[in-house]
Amino acid sequence: MKFENIVSDWQKQFPFLSQYTSSTLYAEADIILIGLRLDKIMSNTYRLILEILPLWIQEKRKISIPVFSVELFNKKGEQFFIKYQLHEYLFEAAVECANQQFGLILRENIRANDIFRLVDSFSSTLITKHNPINWHRLFELKLALAFYSGEADLIDTVKAEIENETKYWNEKEFNHMFMKSIEEWKSDLYQKMENRETFMKQVQLNMDDKKISRLKRIHIIFD
Image (cartoon, rainbow, N blue to C red; front, top):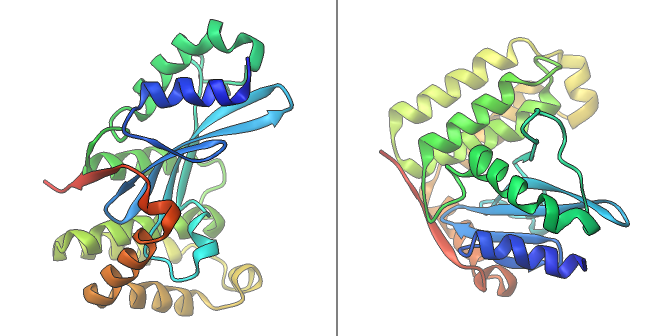
């Protein structure tokens, strides 16, 4: 089966997603892009990845870097690699797994709590604990969602998580990886989320991008 037909099959399953690139299906959900990447493993094989991209970022090239991504696993908990010629045979099972694993946040109205739960569930499975490479973008997503909600208690909760986790990070290794201290990173992150008007203005600028503006819109619900 042709790859473009495979992409079309997935779009039919999640009709609120729009084709963003030849291998991605996204929707614009308030301050994020959310959707699926059909990641080509080899010339004849793909895997499905759920992605969340940030719309509050100033540098456009960095919008394409997910703040969260997790791949689809089969019912045995193994990586779900699908050969193009077996797509029709495996598609029903893949859709079932996708609905089970991603269904709560691949919908037209997404509960913010379900995003937090998925992120927390993913982070609990990380093999290497207390590695800032794994955590720094997850924290940015959680803090951005909290800031967008306007709920002071939620913002304080996420900041407390950040302060607690960063106690375990190695300052020298962090500086080598990010070219800044841990305190500088936290300060930069918190500064991004200080002014709601500036934050939302940047989100709107990115939403007005020609490519992004063509996507269907869904919403995040805070309850």
